[in-house]
Length: 367
Image (cartoon, rainbow, N blue to C red; front, side):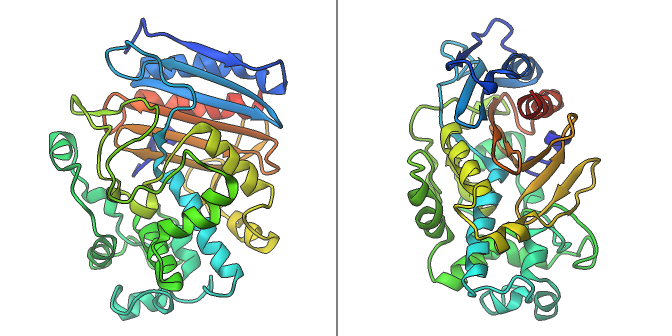
């Protein structure tokens, strides 16, 4: 259940299934296994799912289940979805670009790159920018304070102020002394977003748009802020029996708010691994990783590393936000890539979705 545990905290037996196979390429080699994984994912707790598997320029697309619980329509081809913590890759890329420009020092205390008073002075001097990007701060995870069940449904349109959330998290006891261990905490990426804003004088979302989305032509990707809508063709997510497709994404902010599509995320992974977004020095820093507490799993700077059954390495990120689970990984050379989005029947996600999601990653990149 590695993927389930690493998401935000971390039933349609007769639903339509199907895949769109483009002209035969190497991308089709693992498609049969991935399609079976998608069908298992729907049986295990997802309403529907879509996946894109790419090898070079060849692409296979599959889907299972439905766009809604009624099962009247399939998941839209290349439909939009909330990517959850895969947002962290975008936030990290922008911050590393600022490092390359000499505007942020990766190994300097975060207190030098944040507005005064955001963190207690002694704490701000002990935590470096690198520690924040690598989840080695020991800071309390703000995601633990989000309501669940019917309370989440009732409050899902509430605005969340990121600076205030960081202040409250910093007032809680540390899980461990900064720099001594790895401990996944979304608070770290709220800090990363605030560092970007302090360094540039602009909202972090504007920097993501101008530095990544527009140059790559990612027309179906947006940083929504407080906008609760999910524009364009999309499936629906659920929690506590309610449709929660519309929600205020500020609950995740720079740690998990982005909306995208499989095609756009594939374009992002190709650009990231192909050297279009980071210079070699910053790309090396992004890949410098530490053990992430699970066999074969490591964490760099906003980048997860997984060792696959075939011996290959996968780099990318998982994502979870109420209503959706995401997988976006590539081999380090970018030759093989996989994007998965599952619209969920409940939140927190049923544990039954974990095995099939892990299997999609392995079957797609090892096929």
